[in-house]
Length: 72
Image (cartoon, rainbow, N blue to C red; front, side, top):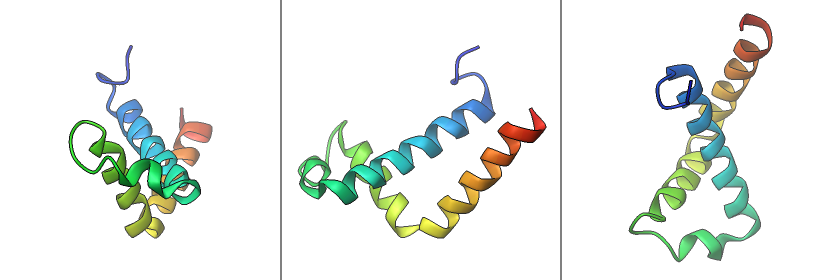
């Protein structure tokens, strides 16, 4: 089953996308900052969410890891 039809997998993919974009922006800010609009603007927005909501993203990562490791 693909991640689109499984809600938990979709949340995992979105969380990984946010974390990856925030990490890439910390290494090379100009890479994501030049694409603030359009289709590639999604990555810039994910990076901003990862930066602004860092404690919440960390809690979500821990909860998701616990869920994947011990519950599934």
